[in-house]
Length: 291
Ligand code: NAP
Image (cartoon, protein in one colour):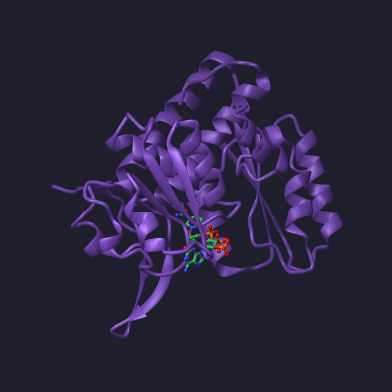
């Protein structure tokens, strides 16, 4: 029997946990964590993401602060806003919605975020902390992926994890997190020779590629845990639909456990953002929380 990992259900449990920690620190410390989101321009997908983050933040009992700036805002103006949020004692987390308009360097803007408020975990400081095995804020999608793996096995130590994709947003941090769990990690990418054979070695196979159904059923070792990070919009039989980077129907015949896409890793991303915000609020103020 293959376990279909229900990301929606796992995310709902995590969000409830965050909400109860928020209520607890409100009662005990008089603190209401706040997340500031900066959106530049009118990209329709980004507007939906920001709306969803706002709703989820408020639902968890935290304060959501939105800064919507016109597309023609200059890079210096965005940087000035980030610096203001860094200095604002009431703000615990800062998220700059990507992509930014072409005239703005996301690299510069992201790295202006104070690492202790960087709830997306994308600053060089937090990437370095992750690499060094130090406490920091970890990118949400990779963190969510590891939480999903742990719902089916607590014993990650010694397992061979293959991560297909080496982006800064997903593949690299996911590999670091799995290494921190004592997995033996192989990072595969577009230049990997015989990707199918590499994938067949995996006890944990993670796909973060952006190519619809790249990972075929016979690339999956019997009993492997398959985490599909991909979200791809395709048109099939005249209908628009979302599919992952894994051929789900074929892969589930071999997998021991597998995430669907959508409904797997996706819902974990916002849940982990909320988790990071409450962690940032607690750490900055010097008290410990478990979430
Ligand atoms: P990305 O920045 O485009 O990186 C894609 C990676 O896949 C690169 O490292 C690339 O290798 C590798 N790759 C591309 N084609 C390949 C192939 N044919 N064989 C092997 N490797 C290949 O993408 P990303 O931001 O990591 O996102 C990956 C996927 O995850 C996308 O579908 C995205 O929509 C999804 N995603 C989902 C969430 C979520 O919340 N669920 C969040 C973020 C992203 P090279 O480095 O060699 O070019």
